[in-house]
Image (cartoon, rainbow, N blue to C red; front, side, top):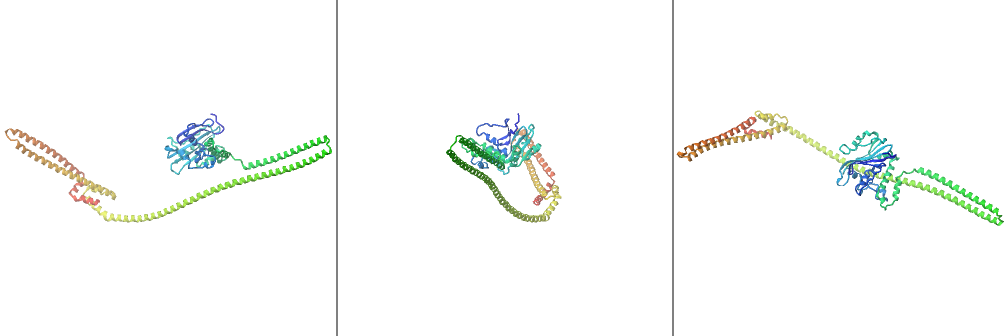
Length: 550
C-alpha cells in the first residue's frame, strides 16, 4: 500500500500482556483502527495497553484511568490508590484469572515513506514483590522496505527477560536501543520519532490525550475552561524575547499610524479652512460677517488647540499604559520565577525529608549492625568455650582409647586367634567400622546359635517320634494277638501283623529320613560358619564378645 509522509501505526502487538498471550492487530492505510463492541468487553482496556503509555513511556496510574473531572485535572494526573487500574494489574490481569508472576511486552510498529519505527515496553511483575524490572525500547530503520521485527518470546511462547531480549535482538545493531528509565525513553522518542525539542512537550501531548480520551467531554456537565488551558499547555510555547520584540515593533507601528492620522486630520482642517475662506470672499461678506467669522475662527482655533492638547494627554496616557503593561509583564515574569523557586523549595523540602528518612534508616541499620557485632562477639566467646570443651573431649577421647579401648581390642585380638570370622572383623582399622562389624558379627553368631539350637530340637523331636512309632508297632502287635484269636483267625492275624509292620516301618523310615536332612542342615550350618562350633563349645564366649562390643 502507498506510504504516508508522516509516521503512522501499521500494527499493534501484545505478548503475554493483560488478557492476551499473543495479539497482533493491523491498522488501516492511514494508521487508524476502530474497536467495536458492547460495554465492558475491554475496548478501553485494550486501548490503554498502548495509549498513552507508549507515547511518553509513563507507567503511572493515571495513564490507565480516564480523567474524571476538569477542575482538578492537575491533581488527577497523579497516582491515586483509589484507581483500580495500574500498570501491574494491566500486565498481570485482575480477577480470578490474575497471574502472580509474568513477563510481558507491548509495542507498536510505525512506518512512513522514509523510515519505520518500533516503540514499546517490557516488564516483569511478581505479586507482592517490591522489585519491578521495567525496560523501554526503540528500533529505527531508515529503509521502509526492509524487514524490521523484534524477538520478544522463545519457541514455547514464554516472554524473554531483559537480558535475553537484548541478546535476541543484538543483530539490529545501532538501530536498536533499550532504556532503563521512562525519562530517557521519552527524551529519545520525542526527538527521534516525533521531532520535538525535548521530552516535556511529549509529556504535555500525553496529558492532552488523557483529557481528550476522557468521557467527560460527552457528559454535558463539565467546565471547558480547564480543557482549553490543557490544550494550550500541550502546544509549544513562544519565546518571551520574541514576544517582546514583536510588541516593540507593534508599538512603533501604532505610533506611526497615530502620527499619520493626526496629519490627515490637519490636512482635512486646512482644506476646510480654504473652502470657508473661498466662499466668504466669494459672497462679499460684510464687516460684521467677517468679524463673526473671525470670532468663530478664533473659537475654532482655541478648540483645535484644546483638541491637540487632549490628543497629547491621550498619547501620554497610552504611553503610561504601555509602561504599566511592561511593568505588569515584568511582575508576571517575577511571579513565575517566584513560583518556580517555590516549586524548587518544595522539591528541596521533599528531598530533605527523604534524606532525614534515609538518615533514620541508616541509624537503625547502624544500631542493628552494632547489635549484630555484639552478637558476633558473644558467639566468638561461645565458640572459644566450645573449642576448649572440644579439646577436653579430645583429651578424654585419647585417654579412653589408650586406657579402655586398647585393652578391649587386645582382648578381642586374643579371641580372634581361634575364631576365623572374628579375625576378619578385627582387620577393620577405623573404630566406627570395627564397632559396626563387631555388632553385626555378634548379631549373626546369635542368629546362627538360635538356628543351631532349633535344628537340634528338631533332631531330638524326630528321634523321639521314631521311638514312638516303634513303640506303637509293638503295641499294635499285642492288640492284634489279643483280638484276633481262634483257629479261623490265624491267616487274618498274620496279615494284620504284616500290615502293621509295613505301615510303622515306612513311617519310621520317613521320619528317620527327615531327621537325617535336619542333621545335614545342622552340619552344613556348622561347616559354613567355623566360629559357631567354637562358640558352642564355650557358651560364655559369645556373652563376653557381646560385652566387649558394647
